[in-house]
Image (cartoon, rainbow, N blue to C red):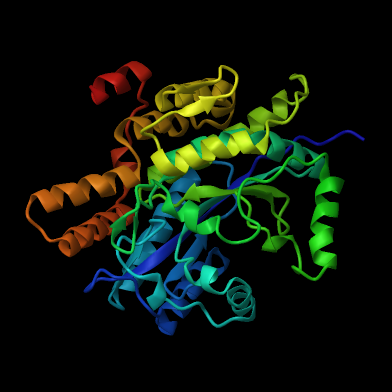
Length: 396
């Protein structure tokens, strides 16, 4: 049977925290009127999340990266405008710099009540937000093949996305503390290598038939086949305060899906890289973000991160051209040079402390920076692609 070529359509999901504009802390409740207002205006593109301070948006299905960017910007601005009426503001960061998880409560729904009962204390700590990207790969076996090969690229995407260096007022020393929170709960992390779609289904059936979970939607891997859509869903990344950073990650992930699909038959099938080794790079991305390199398993050396990004962009150059997203993909060089949200948050905190603000005041200043970035319009300030030579000069 001949496979049909995937459509490679895509959609983006972003989770936001709602912040009290007076205290700069997380809201403990979301006003029902605000929720109904946003649902009326955004329809199925809006939903609530596990914690009462969290909401989620999902774009329409897109073929154009420019259209996806415009839709995300519009939704962020709409949420900010409506939330202001209730003394709240959306924050697109994966952890809040100082609010305590113990003061948060999950939403009272059957699904979330079941998760809370199952995870207990671990679930209560899940006051974290992510960026998820769906890419259409309609053939089941092709979706599994791309998932298998995508695993080695996930640490690079994670490193580029970091937005969670603080937790309950402390500098964790990690660029993505959200990852540490997530991996404490079941059925998380990078998936193993599956032989085919049937192998995946049989694995899921073991837990479903045992009554451990109702379906595969209770598997929250960093990368998974969606059970709602014929898509491969990337879930490893922190949500990015700057829209252009998130758009960059979506563009690169989509290009990688096409690259891995089109080269699958041309490349000789080599043994899957051990999950142990992939997880070492995942840890490096979680810990260091873009400030340290990742292991190149072909050479056995740690490569500078900017070289990792440049090599990745070379791999997907044909695919970025096909989708017309060269500038969006090349933006990864700018992130590798100037740092991620985590780097900006830490730098802002240090600057405010140097200006004699107290620890608490400096953390509130970090929140202010995140709120501003969440609703700023990057389309008006689009930067050109940054070459390796330029990025090194900027870093000097």
